[in-house]
Image 1 (cartoon, rainbow, N blue to C red):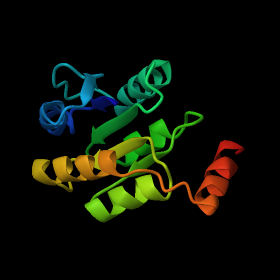
Image 2 (cartoon, helix red, strand yellow):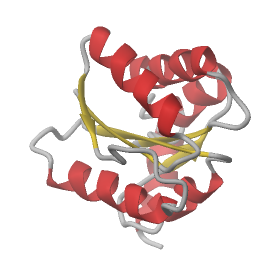
Image 3 (cartoon, rainbow, N blue to C red):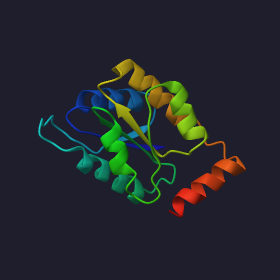
Image 4 (cartoon, rainbow, N blue to C red):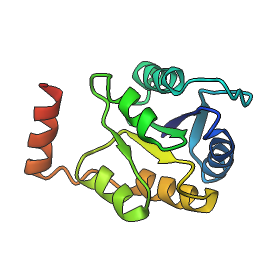
Length: 147
């Protein structure tokens, strides 16, 4: 599975840890930036880079992970794109629900609210949780796609 990651300056350090740990766990991790911490960068560009890379990927199971201070900005930006179901997640329970119920394809993490150890655990839980594909979940996703 390809995992595309991106972060603004607030999530830069957490992203680096995630790239290292997820690569070690066997995922094909593609870092979509930023490459250096830039205190005046803006989160929408990294959300866009991750989404466009996912959509262009030859891996239909590819996913994205976005990190900013609150996670909210990245989530809002990513959800502007058709077919993207970005979820702001702060614990393992929500990570499971975001995948199991909503088939989220982008995980947004709040760097100011969780530590690196929590981020790794959340990301691993999210990546390892399958979509349950219950009829009600499929129906709801179809409704989202029609908005």
